[in-house]
Length: 269
Length: 266
Figure (cartoon, each protein chain N blue to C red):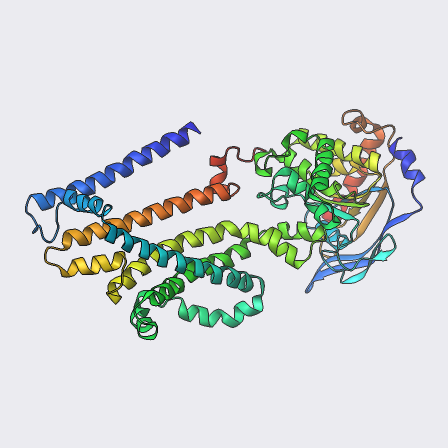
């Protein structure tokens, strides 16, 4: 346990060191005049601006709008992908029948669909949510199908031997066993959804949101500082969301092999 | 009451009847012409080299695998699905117990099919956990327990519905010697008190003679059949040290061992 904690602390310091180094290089390059300040403002200025934005009500409304679209899109993706994944994973016939369509749609880069969907749905929230949903469905869908396939046949047989039927096996064995896979899929999708939210806003160009802020700052003279401050916000949002989801997974699924040690008491034989 | 006298007292009432049972996967024969009558209350051990279809036999009796040939009847009724009166303990407790449930909820799970309320299910689970010596572990999770304790949980879960037929598939195969002996004695105690009919599959010849009222030896696959059917008559109550030293125990163990080996050599 203590070795683990020590390693954790070491990782934390190393991570911090990496951040500080990158930060220092940006700062030095800009201050030394190696590149023009309007291309790369010093890191302290960018960070200062990012902090300043936290007190700007208009900017915060934009963040709120982006997060609302993100949450709505991700929620819709879950509502579609989890039941669909359960269906595909438990009825091989449906899986085979839809395999070709799924493999055709999957590699399409969602960002490339922005112009098309904008044409169909306009450049409002509908487009943004639709694109977020589309892009977020895949990781959740595939993780659900994969997780179902990984369910231990012995766990299913155990329930069957106690006289439980097909539906009970799905709900009491397959679904709980798949839940950690679904959660990991949602975590991947959460990052994808954030990318799509900001990208759609930047490309559609009007309304409100973090992407709009970045797009408009990019048009202004000497806007690089604001663009980078917006990017810092986007990165921070992603970091916080990921951290929260990892924490939630650890709380909800302490039994998975990677969490067991942390929860105290690996299987002793 | 000693094993020997009890075995003679039962005897007449058939619990489990297999008639010319055969199994195959495609061209691969697993079991061939298995005919076996198990009277109520008997503890039957099925021994055979690994890969001889012992587990397949057990899954067939449990109704998890429909018999391709022949018939299986339990209490006179042909097995079509999984019979109600039956419970199974698998070797791999780590995969058979549900890690997301507490020990108590794992044990109470089969009771959900009996229409019991939550409080009744808990009370029943606690009663049976107490019996297998795990009353302190009810609120822990299976993966927080040692292998032996996990298998006790699996046994408790199998007993909670008071099955009339208990099937065990190499239940102690992955445990250390000391734990295995403790669980063998726990099983014998359960059998003595409840009079449950038990089919116990093992590849351990010693264990089969120690635990069983009767030992049936299967030939190695493909197409395993019954090559030996021996009653076990041993003096007094079983004791890990004394019983294993009895001349009749040693003789029986040798006989079972020869039956297993002779077929292996062919």
